[in-house]
Length: 328
Image (cartoon, rainbow, N blue to C red):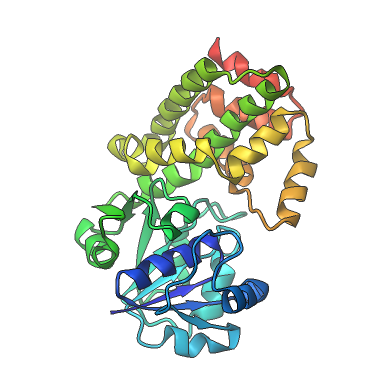
């Protein structure tokens, strides 16, 4: 079986490394934005954001090599973030003839508010779309450290058919037909992580960890995930599984969303902080997702105090300490 990973960011490269180690014929293609990364992959044999070197069997393709990279692929992994999903799909659509298109992005499309499966279904209609969720840090996947994930499709059997070749002792998968629950959980957990990062920023100058408060707000965030996602048609068991609480935990322990929250909690201006991180190539999808959660909650007539507090801090000039008021 051939796998084509389109996009050589950290997560795309990590997926390609895992697939190659599984013995799958694997092509990693660089988008025009990945040119510098591809030079590093070729010269150093590793991605600058990942600790491990590439498997020798992994095939690398520059931007001009798209036709060869995609030819014959039965599974195509779309390794763009939510901002770049549609442009990537439009760029590659004439070359993708795979049975399955797999989305690893965790967010909604800016502007339209569409889930990634909806974007890819519109742009790549000849392929069944699979959404990937769960606690999966790129660096750990690339290193072969134990990881668990959930693959979701229109049917659980379809998700299993796409994901089974990737399933291994180091990347253990479960399969579901709750695409909406997986994708919305993957979006909302980034917002929760920003809030817990804010607590880290508040506590750093005082030498405090706020462990009790973080545990309480983590729990509150999980309940709010369930409340909104079930209102939108997802299932509670999905939220309380790998795609929801599991991913919320790992993202809250580390990653760019938590880092952004920590910087804001330490007193740095939200907008300027976001710009600074983006200038370093770090996409903080939880910022747009904070807006999305606020909009969706309003449409459903729901009160989500934890997520509302994060929105006030990021967009309404509220003091980061307002997040502690949620405990009341």
